[in-house]
Image (tube, rainbow, N blue to C red; front, side):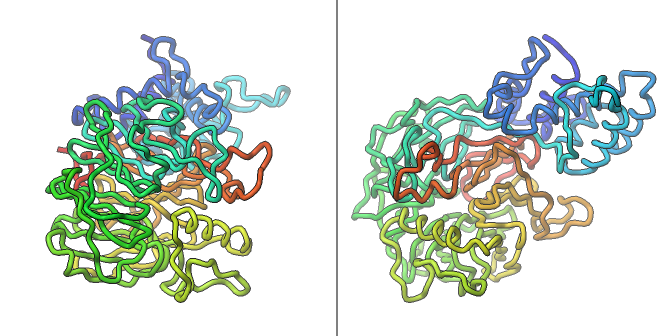
Length: 553
């Protein structure tokens, strides 16, 4: 086994949240994830880059390799007596006593002092005027100052195209339903649906290419992926619920439901094992008591329209967003007839509950009325008198066309914060950064992460406890907005047990997503390609998500 500066960087980042001094501390699943992800960044037998990083999708489309080399060169400063002053600067900038602590600090807060760290690299590895290169630095190195030293890799295979919602099981494996089939020319107008993908803790595909798992007649999955103690669940576009055994991935469904349902979206599991699924086009909720997939019950809830995201709090209340109106619906899990609503902005998507019972919701407009800039064309699914779209793809098409035909709109959407008492605390969180925000998740520090679709970024927001945020940040402040060439149009972010952030590349080329005619060489560019892991940036959690976020045991 080779031990050098590069293997140090590659070993620290996936385990950054688990490092305590010189030891690794975490749950069995956390340690499995952290250790198995190292090989994607570095080959510990040779001391060089790992095979996943060397794939063209990562090497050519991200700064990850160059950032790792700069970080390695910073570590090397402390092994050169003539660079002792530069080594002291590195330790001072990271408030550390040694290089392991320094790298751990950078990995956890990769945006902190990024400019000063890069300037230290530049001064310690000067340019040779004759060659215009930094001869003592490791190439490739960064030519421009980075916004952060975060490291991200994209993973493909297993049928992963146009992933909507990501979920972890209790062993660190990731599950996600796919909008469309890889290799197809699918978009919101013409499409071939995908199945279900399954990846191991190290990002290895366990489901087969091209279709992923199926065996139940699934024809495309949107936001509808959930995990309970025994099963993975997907709410499909073709009016059915797919169910898979977590032990052997065997197809067990379709689930049995007592009445007909429409096209489905969000899935959530309560702490008591109940599973709730949003019937997006027929305006119902589907309830599986105790997670029994043979006992599905369709439930009608007054004034519920286009239910989309679903989350369940510690009181067993079910919180449901609407993709059609400006209502957030809340009802007791054992008394759905007692539903209440909260007015939020139009275009509700992801919903998440933190450990204090506060609820965070992604809203894709800046107003409950959907106010638009002067001259903007109103999309057909927003006016109060317009009919609700009959299919999920019609809704997506309307939203995409709206932005395509209104190029003067460069920002819309923000995040809302609701108290456990169902009062709106803040409504305009991340305004200016958010651009069609979609998925929301809570990490083990009760801070918030948002998949920013049109912003093509992962947005980190200070949660309800500012003590867990960087100095100067308070509830609702954006901590950092992560971007990379491998991060495409993102619908979801989730945190694994080791504190790494996984995000869904849902769309790739926004123009090709609206595909009434052949698009030539880009005709297969509608669906987002795989998913991305951004290492070491979030507070670890305990998966699977059953009820509100759980901190590690």
